[in-house]
Amino acid sequence: MKTAYRCSPFPRVPPRPYFSGCTSTSIHVSEEEITMKKRSVIFAIILTFCLATHSFAALNNSGFESGDTTGWTISSVPDATVTTVGTYYSGQGYQAPLNDYFLQLSAGSGTSGATTASQTTWVAAGTTINGFATFDGQDQLPNNDFAFVRILLGATQVAEPWSKDISLVGDYLNTAWEPWSWTATASDNYTLQYGVGNGGDNSVPSYAGFDMSSPIPEPSTYMYVLLAIALGAVEHARRKMNVRKQKGESYV
Ligand SMILES: [Ca+2]
Ligand SMILES: [Ca+2]
Image 1: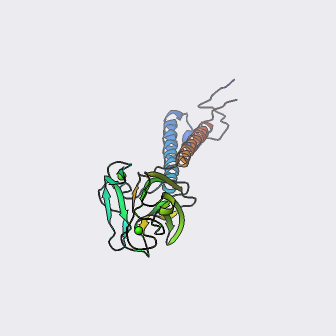
Image 2 (image 1 turned 180 degrees about the horizontal axis):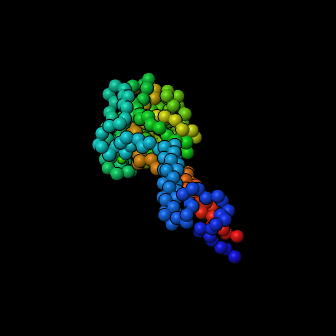
Image 3 (image 1 turned 135 degrees about the vertical axis):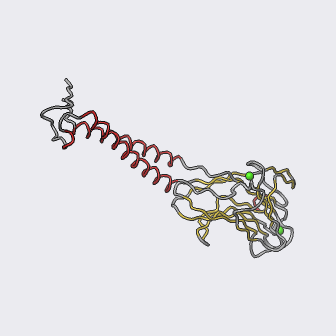
Protein backbone atom coordinates (compact mmCIF):
# COMPACT_ATOMS: atom_id res chain seq x y z
CA MET A 1 0.00 0.00 0.00
CA LYS A 2 1.37 3.39 -0.97
CA THR A 3 1.91 5.79 1.89
CA ALA A 4 3.25 9.30 1.58
CA TYR A 5 4.92 11.14 4.47
CA ARG A 6 5.35 14.78 3.60
CA CYS A 7 6.92 15.63 7.00
CA SER A 8 8.20 12.26 8.08
CA PRO A 9 10.41 12.33 11.20
CA PHE A 10 12.49 9.59 9.57
CA PRO A 11 12.84 10.56 5.95
CA ARG A 12 14.46 8.01 3.65
CA VAL A 13 16.66 10.73 2.23
CA PRO A 14 18.20 13.23 4.66
CA PRO A 15 16.41 16.53 4.10
CA ARG A 16 18.19 19.67 3.24
CA PRO A 17 18.31 22.28 6.04
CA TYR A 18 15.39 24.22 4.59
CA PHE A 19 13.22 21.10 4.72
CA SER A 20 13.33 20.98 8.51
CA GLY A 21 10.49 22.29 10.61
CA CYS A 22 7.72 20.87 8.39
CA THR A 23 7.71 23.80 5.97
CA SER A 24 7.17 21.50 3.05
CA THR A 25 4.36 23.47 1.39
CA SER A 26 6.40 26.59 0.66
CA ILE A 27 9.49 24.53 -0.24
CA HIS A 28 7.44 22.37 -2.60
CA VAL A 29 6.49 25.41 -4.72
CA SER A 30 10.08 26.63 -4.82
CA GLU A 31 11.44 23.27 -5.97
CA GLU A 32 8.79 22.94 -8.65
CA GLU A 33 9.63 26.37 -9.96
CA ILE A 34 13.31 25.51 -10.08
CA THR A 35 12.55 22.23 -11.81
CA MET A 36 10.39 23.91 -14.42
CA LYS A 37 13.03 26.54 -15.16
CA LYS A 38 15.76 23.95 -15.55
CA ARG A 39 13.56 21.79 -17.73
CA SER A 40 12.74 24.78 -19.93
CA VAL A 41 16.43 25.64 -20.33
CA ILE A 42 17.32 22.05 -21.29
CA PHE A 43 14.39 21.86 -23.68
CA ALA A 44 15.37 25.16 -25.32
CA ILE A 45 18.98 24.02 -25.72
CA ILE A 46 17.94 20.77 -27.39
CA LEU A 47 15.48 22.50 -29.69
CA THR A 48 18.02 25.15 -30.63
CA PHE A 49 20.55 22.46 -31.44
CA CYS A 50 18.07 20.53 -33.56
CA LEU A 51 16.87 23.56 -35.49
CA ALA A 52 20.40 24.86 -36.00
CA THR A 53 21.73 21.59 -37.34
CA HIS A 54 18.78 20.07 -39.14
CA SER A 55 16.88 22.79 -40.92
CA PHE A 56 17.59 24.09 -44.36
CA ALA A 57 18.63 27.71 -44.75
CA ALA A 58 16.12 28.67 -47.46
CA LEU A 59 17.38 30.10 -50.71
CA ASN A 60 16.77 33.77 -51.31
CA ASN A 61 14.08 34.36 -53.93
CA SER A 62 14.02 30.63 -54.71
CA GLY A 63 10.78 30.92 -56.69
CA PHE A 64 11.70 34.19 -58.47
CA GLU A 65 8.58 35.76 -57.05
CA SER A 66 10.38 39.08 -56.69
CA GLY A 67 10.03 39.29 -60.49
CA ASP A 68 13.79 39.50 -60.92
CA THR A 69 16.96 37.54 -60.13
CA THR A 70 17.59 39.01 -56.68
CA GLY A 71 19.72 36.59 -54.65
CA TRP A 72 21.12 34.79 -57.70
CA THR A 73 24.53 35.14 -59.33
CA ILE A 74 24.22 35.33 -63.10
CA SER A 75 26.92 34.26 -65.55
CA SER A 76 25.89 34.78 -69.15
CA VAL A 77 27.45 34.33 -72.55
CA PRO A 78 27.12 36.94 -75.35
CA ASP A 79 23.58 37.65 -76.53
CA ALA A 80 22.07 35.52 -73.76
CA THR A 81 18.83 36.53 -72.12
CA VAL A 82 18.17 36.16 -68.40
CA THR A 83 14.67 37.04 -67.37
CA THR A 84 11.82 36.17 -65.03
CA VAL A 85 8.47 35.61 -66.67
CA GLY A 86 5.06 34.27 -65.77
CA THR A 87 4.14 32.78 -69.12
CA TYR A 88 6.02 31.96 -72.28
CA TYR A 89 5.15 30.26 -75.55
CA SER A 90 7.50 28.23 -77.75
CA GLY A 91 5.95 25.19 -79.40
CA GLN A 92 3.84 24.87 -76.28
CA GLY A 93 2.69 27.27 -73.62
CA TYR A 94 4.63 27.50 -70.38
CA GLN A 95 3.22 28.91 -67.20
CA ALA A 96 5.03 29.29 -63.90
CA PRO A 97 4.61 25.91 -62.13
CA LEU A 98 4.80 27.56 -58.73
CA ASN A 99 3.13 30.91 -58.13
CA ASP A 100 3.60 33.73 -60.63
CA TYR A 101 7.16 33.77 -61.96
CA PHE A 102 9.94 31.46 -63.13
CA LEU A 103 13.46 31.98 -64.43
CA GLN A 104 14.10 31.76 -68.16
CA LEU A 105 17.62 31.50 -69.54
CA SER A 106 18.81 31.38 -73.14
CA ALA A 107 22.03 29.89 -74.51
CA GLY A 108 22.98 33.13 -76.27
CA SER A 109 25.77 32.85 -78.81
CA GLY A 110 28.46 31.18 -76.73
CA THR A 111 29.89 27.70 -77.22
CA SER A 112 32.50 27.54 -74.48
CA GLY A 113 30.10 27.81 -71.57
CA ALA A 114 26.52 28.04 -70.46
CA THR A 115 24.33 30.84 -69.22
CA THR A 116 23.90 30.12 -65.51
CA ALA A 117 22.11 31.32 -62.40
CA SER A 118 23.67 30.17 -59.12
CA GLN A 119 23.06 30.53 -55.41
CA THR A 120 25.03 29.13 -52.48
CA THR A 121 23.46 28.22 -49.16
CA TRP A 122 23.89 25.93 -46.19
CA VAL A 123 22.15 22.58 -46.60
CA ALA A 124 21.88 20.19 -43.68
CA ALA A 125 22.38 16.47 -44.20
CA GLY A 126 19.11 14.76 -45.04
CA THR A 127 17.50 17.88 -46.49
CA THR A 128 15.81 17.47 -49.87
CA ILE A 129 15.57 20.31 -52.38
CA ASN A 130 12.80 20.13 -54.98
CA GLY A 131 12.23 22.11 -58.14
CA PHE A 132 10.90 22.17 -61.68
CA ALA A 133 12.80 22.60 -64.94
CA THR A 134 12.04 22.62 -68.64
CA PHE A 135 14.16 22.54 -71.78
CA ASP A 136 13.06 24.33 -74.92
CA GLY A 137 15.28 22.92 -77.68
CA GLN A 138 15.58 25.31 -80.58
CA ASP A 139 18.37 23.54 -82.44
CA GLN A 140 19.04 20.26 -84.23
CA LEU A 141 21.77 17.63 -84.03
CA PRO A 142 24.70 17.60 -84.25
CA ASN A 143 24.36 20.93 -82.45
CA ASN A 144 23.45 19.37 -79.12
CA ASP A 145 22.22 22.29 -77.02
CA PHE A 146 21.76 21.38 -73.38
CA ALA A 147 20.29 22.47 -70.04
CA PHE A 148 20.91 21.33 -66.46
CA VAL A 149 20.37 21.65 -62.72
CA ARG A 150 23.62 21.04 -60.87
CA ILE A 151 24.75 20.92 -57.26
CA LEU A 152 28.28 22.18 -56.62
CA LEU A 153 30.67 22.22 -53.70
CA GLY A 154 32.92 25.12 -54.56
CA ALA A 155 33.83 24.50 -58.21
CA THR A 156 33.25 20.75 -57.97
CA GLN A 157 30.02 19.29 -59.29
CA VAL A 158 28.60 16.78 -56.80
CA ALA A 159 25.26 16.07 -58.47
CA GLU A 160 23.17 16.79 -61.56
CA PRO A 161 19.58 16.05 -60.55
CA TRP A 162 18.17 17.17 -63.92
CA SER A 163 19.51 17.57 -67.44
CA LYS A 164 18.23 17.56 -71.00
CA ASP A 165 19.70 18.08 -74.46
CA ILE A 166 18.67 17.90 -78.09
CA SER A 167 19.72 14.26 -78.34
CA LEU A 168 17.19 13.40 -75.62
CA VAL A 169 14.21 15.50 -76.67
CA GLY A 170 14.71 15.53 -80.47
CA ASP A 171 15.43 18.26 -82.99
CA TYR A 172 13.54 21.49 -82.30
CA LEU A 173 11.52 19.85 -79.53
CA ASN A 174 10.94 20.72 -75.91
CA THR A 175 9.77 19.25 -72.63
CA ALA A 176 6.95 20.00 -70.26
CA TRP A 177 7.82 21.09 -66.73
CA GLU A 178 9.70 18.23 -65.09
CA PRO A 179 10.20 17.80 -61.32
CA TRP A 180 13.64 17.19 -59.89
CA SER A 181 14.96 16.64 -56.39
CA TRP A 182 18.24 16.21 -54.58
CA THR A 183 18.99 15.12 -51.03
CA ALA A 184 22.15 16.22 -49.23
CA THR A 185 24.06 13.33 -47.68
CA ALA A 186 26.32 15.66 -45.70
CA SER A 187 25.90 19.16 -44.31
CA ASP A 188 27.79 21.83 -46.23
CA ASN A 189 27.58 25.07 -48.20
CA TYR A 190 26.22 23.90 -51.55
CA THR A 191 25.66 25.87 -54.74
CA LEU A 192 22.49 25.27 -56.72
CA GLN A 193 23.15 26.10 -60.37
CA TYR A 194 20.74 26.35 -63.32
CA GLY A 195 22.13 26.52 -66.85
CA VAL A 196 21.57 26.28 -70.59
CA GLY A 197 24.16 26.26 -73.37
CA ASN A 198 24.81 25.78 -77.07
CA GLY A 199 26.36 22.62 -78.42
CA GLY A 200 28.36 22.37 -81.60
CA ASP A 201 28.05 25.95 -82.81
CA ASN A 202 27.08 29.30 -81.40
CA SER A 203 23.83 29.85 -83.21
CA VAL A 204 20.15 29.06 -82.71
CA PRO A 205 20.15 29.26 -78.92
CA SER A 206 17.89 26.98 -76.91
CA TYR A 207 16.04 28.06 -73.75
CA ALA A 208 15.42 26.60 -70.31
CA GLY A 209 13.06 27.43 -67.46
CA PHE A 210 13.50 26.92 -63.72
CA ASP A 211 11.33 27.31 -60.62
CA MET A 212 11.10 26.00 -57.09
CA SER A 213 9.32 26.58 -53.82
CA SER A 214 10.89 27.20 -50.45
CA PRO A 215 12.64 24.05 -49.23
CA ILE A 216 10.84 22.16 -46.50
CA PRO A 217 12.68 20.49 -43.62
CA GLU A 218 12.87 16.74 -43.92
CA PRO A 219 10.80 14.46 -41.66
CA SER A 220 14.03 13.77 -39.80
CA THR A 221 13.82 17.31 -38.44
CA TYR A 222 10.45 16.58 -36.89
CA MET A 223 11.82 13.34 -35.45
CA TYR A 224 14.52 15.29 -33.65
CA VAL A 225 11.95 17.74 -32.31
CA LEU A 226 9.88 14.83 -30.98
CA LEU A 227 13.02 13.39 -29.43
CA ALA A 228 13.68 16.74 -27.74
CA ILE A 229 10.14 16.77 -26.34
CA ALA A 230 10.56 13.22 -25.05
CA LEU A 231 13.88 14.08 -23.40
CA GLY A 232 12.26 17.12 -21.79
CA ALA A 233 9.48 14.95 -20.38
CA VAL A 234 11.97 12.41 -19.02
CA GLU A 235 13.99 15.16 -17.40
CA HIS A 236 10.87 16.62 -15.84
CA ALA A 237 9.85 13.23 -14.42
CA ARG A 238 13.33 12.61 -13.05
CA ARG A 239 13.48 15.94 -11.25
CA LYS A 240 9.98 15.55 -9.91
CA MET A 241 11.00 12.21 -8.44
CA ASN A 242 14.06 13.78 -6.83
CA VAL A 243 11.94 16.46 -5.20
CA ARG A 244 9.66 13.83 -3.72
CA LYS A 245 12.61 11.84 -2.44
CA GLN A 246 14.04 14.92 -0.78
CA LYS A 247 10.73 15.44 0.97
CA GLY A 248 10.80 11.87 2.19
CA GLU A 249 7.80 10.55 0.31
CA SER A 250 7.46 6.77 0.27
CA TYR A 251 6.02 4.67 -2.55
CA VAL A 252 6.42 1.23 -0.96
CA1 LIG B 1 7.81 30.78 -58.98
CA1 LIG C 1 22.22 26.12 -80.53
